[in-house]
Length: 135
Image (cartoon, rainbow, N blue to C red; front, side, top):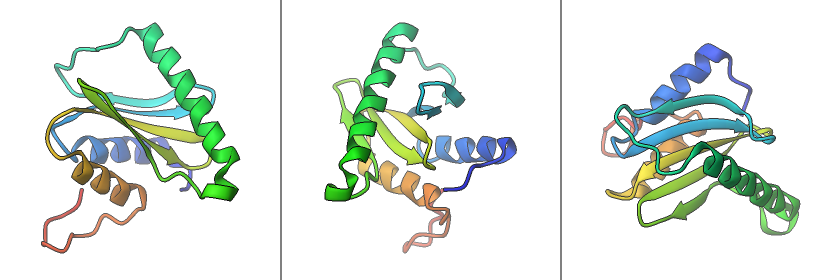
């Protein structure tokens, strides 16, 4: 995926946020753990402290780097899914140097949400088979 200009990044994050009312956060991180862009649903209470989020992100980046190191053998990572009692974290590659982290409430149909996010990431915001816009 090409690097998006800031205006395009804003539109992109808004399109991800509008995929489902179950989305809590959408964050783009670089591979050093720096926040590039972040959106949070109004009224959402953080479940982890800022320090706990930093530690979790550090482990996420380490895991992602390991997956990349073995990708010649097992293929490229399309996304990872972490399912907890209280939330779901979906992590997608965003270009070659960033990660898109989407946190969802653990309700509804997460597979449909993941499919819709992948459609947006692919740049294919077309209508689905049922005529409903995937966006």
